[in-house]
Length: 454
Image (cartoon, rainbow, N blue to C red; front, top):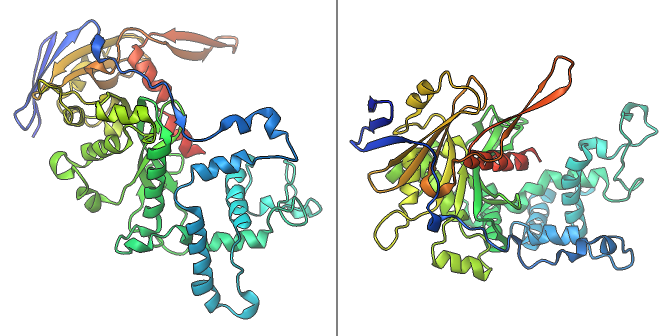
């Protein structure tokens, strides 16, 4: 059922299908209440790790090199790598080798080979090469390229032979199977994701500003439509549009992912926590907020923050943003007087515009010039204070944003830099006014996509 709208020049009244009334009033600007401003933590980053090993003089030591990059990887590894290696070798000995003749039997993987294999996977991204191109032999005419050849094999840099790499790659996924939960159709990867989340919650002290977005783990089928995976997603706008979809949160300062949730398909996600109460989209957002708040649990400051319900700030992608989501999650914590006292939220708003004056803002601002913006305030039936912003960074499109009252100021902040060529082909820059709250949004909003590109 469509909402009922009564529109005047300064007020917008919206009544949704549940008979809840939202009255949006035009204001000059919106500022957070002084006592409710979100404050940043003093310590942000990985806990219990000595970063002095990365200092130049320590990296250049040959006789006493501490392998800081490997130690950092082990510190942030998802799960017990020795147990995973043992599980991999168990698969080789009990499943792979019994099906092969004596000449084709595979050796068990040593600890050195395990980390060399993982190092090649990580290093290949920065080198910009993959597959057989990592084992190039320059004397072969067919393998010549514009870039310098690289050979990681025993007759090159003596890291790992190509045959050994291919053998490990064929069985590597079995190291992460969660055999304790075989009834879960996602058990080949769910244990790895759960271990990742536990590691981040314990050891990664996050900023008070957290970003939410979706990301893709690419899938390239070989002989079957979906392999053994029960569900695959396709999101055209992503760098890798086809694969396993994950909803994620990320620290806005360190750029480190904090929490991942596998999207298991419509039916399975419909049974997840909060879904029956507030619907799938808002429920997913609530779970991400709940699981990624106060990361760095080993740190005393995070324990104190959890006990006192310290307010954090979340920046959401448009998929997560709606009036219903913000009012519900903001109300999950209340103050002594029963008023909503949860975290603060900022999000771009596109399709989930129920109870939001999107149509009115777009119509009102249709002929406004670039750099214009309108601010409206409202209060939900449960007492949550909301702010709606319509903003034009160019003369054509109105961008809509929704936030809670204390998420930030709508006064002019860092301007948008519009670059364009002049009549001589030189690049010119024009600075376009935009609210401080939106400036910060665009500063951090692509941080999860940066992880996805990597």
